[in-house]
Image (tube, helix red, strand yellow):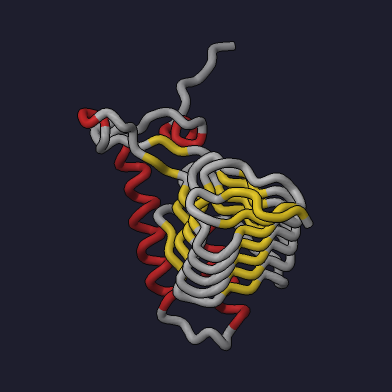
Length: 190
């Protein structure tokens, strides 16, 4: 059996470079436009209607979230379809999830306000800089991401780990550790 060519979505998730002039790029842009529309709807909602917030967020990520998921808008994403949320997850206000590479929040994850989870980057070579490539972010069970922290592409935050407020995470964080600083470094074991 012949291997079918990968779609642009498969290539993006696989970390391949995606150029703006790729003939399939309009498919990605259509999802981006959908995400902009749905996040606008989400961000204009009354926070006290938790069921409606979950319903609209589920539409955004193209998958139903558990009834234990709690999000305080506003929330921003450039894509939405590659976000996966476990049970008892809390996402505080003003977070940015750039999820083209895939973002997974396992059970009992806490995400502080103004956290940025960034899965997409640009090549360093100036001639290719308008292109992008993506790598997934995995935040394992019981991890806590503090306010205004940034997690860069390709990072895993281990089980029970804590990322201190304002940290910039550029390397994987081991389970049961606390990291802080720019770039984030281990400051304590739990």
